Each structure stands twice: as structure tokens, then as C-alpha cells.
Amino acid sequence: MRHAFIRGLGGLGLLALAGCGANFGEQALLGAGAGAGTAAVVGGSVATGAVVGAAGNVAYCKVYPGRCR
Image 1 (cartoon, rainbow, N blue to C red):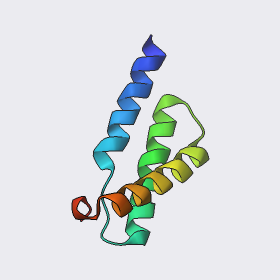
Image 2: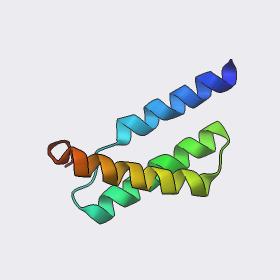
Image 3: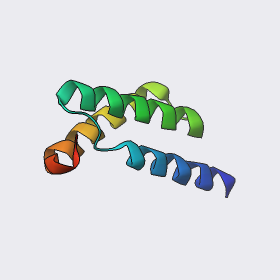
């Protein structure tokens, strides 16, 4: 139960940071930081979290460009 709560909390943290960055590099860097931080909190692979976070943030900003600053 506690593990699921921590994962959910980490996911919310990642979603809160999604959409940041004015260009591709910033979007990838901020997404990687959010993913790595979330992975560290939930006890996952930090490298995998960084890759998933970067890809997720860049993809989000491609789909919703108006929400990315």
C-alpha cells in the first residue's frame, strides 16, 4: 500500500513539471530532471527515469505546444 502511494505521489510530481521549457533542449533537460527525481523517490532506476521523463516532456510539448513556456 505504501509503495503504491509513493509511486502515485511521484507520478503527480512528474505531471506537475510537464510542459516546462521554451525549446527542445530545455524540455528534454527539465523532463529528464523530473523523471530522475521521481525515480529516485520511488526507488527506481534513475537513468531510466531520466530517459522516460525527457521523452515524456518533449512529447507532451509537441502535442500541447501552447501549454509549454
